[in-house]
Image (tube, rainbow, N blue to C red; front, side):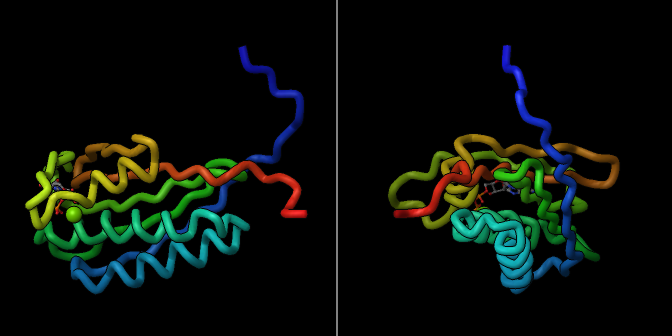
Length: 144
Ligand SMILES: Nc1ncnc2c1ncn2[C@@H]1O[C@H](COP(=O)(O)OP(=O)(O)O)[C@@H](O)[C@H]1O
Ligand SMILES: [Mg+2]
């Protein structure tokens, strides 16, 4: 059994952007993630976070939905975040076993790799949310 020995303050920060279903929205999504992660002192996962949100927003842009996708970055603990993209399509994402010659089908495999498999999708009445949980290195003393 894990026993918490220290009181931790609840971590509740969250930031969301509504973006059009266009490939160009990936750049705005990366900016949102970059700004949030830097602001929370999680600079070591900025690159991974940008890659993840690019893939998720890029996939949402391909659904052909109208209106806006919602890109959210949520600080779950002091060292971990959830990046999610909600779209209005009820089709769920699926990991593709892309062969070496395939020109597509590697986006979610990359998300799977970067999160250690901690990603998924939740269906809702008006579509679904695809999320990815990213963990930063434990905070410790900086380099000597
Ligand atoms: N947001 C989404 N909505 C519906 N289907 C999705 C979504 N994201 C991924 N998918 C499905 O999962 C597949 C795999 O996604 P991905 O690995 O990113 O490959 P690619 O985008 O190159 O097809 C997609 O081809 C698509 O069929
Ligand atoms: Mg993709």
